[in-house]
Amino acid sequence: MSEHQKMMRRALALARRGVGKTAPNPAVGCVIVRDGAIVGRGWHKKAGTPHAEVHALNEAGALAAGADVYVTLEPCAHYGKTPPCAKALVEARVARVFVGMVDPNPLVAGKGIEMLREAGIEVEVGLLEEACRELNRPFIKWIQTRLPYVVLKSALTLDGKSATASGDSKWVTSDHARREVHRLRGRLDAIMVGVGTVLKDDPQLTCRLPGGKDPLRVVVDTTLRVPLHAALFGLQSGAGTLIATCCQDEAKIEAVKARGAEVLLCRESGGQVDLADLFAKLGERGVQSVLLEGGSHLAGAALRGGHIDRCMIFLAPKLVGGAGMGLFAGEGAVLMADAIQLDDVTVKRVGVDLLVEGKPREPVQGSTFKVQC
Image 1 (cartoon, rainbow, N blue to C red):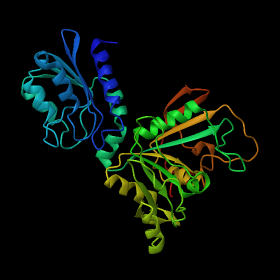
Image 2 (cartoon, rainbow, N blue to C red):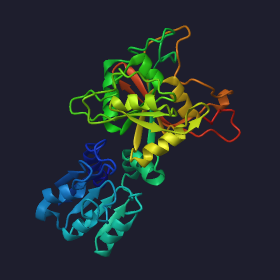
Image 3 (cartoon, rainbow, N blue to C red):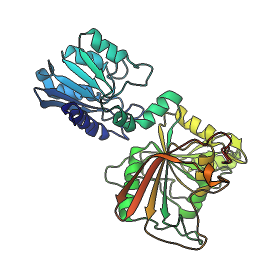
Image 4 (cartoon, one colour):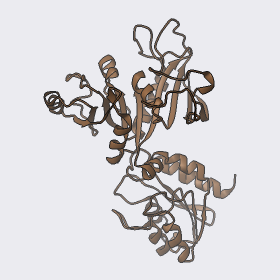
């Protein structure tokens, strides 16, 4: 590994500290190096506050002149809530800037790099680009499509069961895996479940880690069956609760609003909330990422609709046997050859469990897989 790569990895490590806290901005890290030593470090901590480059420049002070800068995302070139970072780097008289990736935001999109080069600063683009892109997948998708990045999370036994035949699902995985899920909740903007999960499990849908950030709680409830005594109402939380529905019964709507939740009316498709419409409405609100946690009917509809960007499946070393319940309800592939393949698959141990991650590949044209919700 080259020294340049090592320094960009340092910048990536800093950027990860801001994941889940910077929306609608991306997470960015910056390292300033002078004579082989790091003299400035910074990361974007929260939307509306100074960007990573400003924090790093403040730490470096006069040592920034003639130094090398490693930044995971192209420095901004426009005035928003903060001044342009590219301008700050020019004024600090840095020598070189190593950029992980070009900013996909049309307001930037190469303008920051151009500003630096016009000032005589050497710029190299694409250092550890794939790692930099992976860091901000939700931001990239949202800025390009105005749709949130959807992560499906589930826990299964080795024989593919998410619950026993009686419906019992506590607990499929270990404490280690559940802590990992709460960390994930703290990094994503929203968590989504179907009303069936609320009726069965009565979850709070919060991040129960010290200092963790609660996601927006979204319940997909076509006919407004959510109980008014549900645990996700009336929480002491910095995030709200949103019920996505097709129901236009004013009495039901007002009753849910009286519990402190928002009711979002969506189009209907096949007798259910149209997920395409729901995700579009969430994207319009600036929601860049959604954690899809259950249940099987919602997961099945999301899979058939092509809405899932990433799967995170925790596999527990358990065997349920019998009927049990699987991950997806509804129609699926008729032939094994038509099953949706996962790409970029990784496997890691989480306590006694395994975490399998991958990106669903779109079904091939002519496939028997049901792609309409």
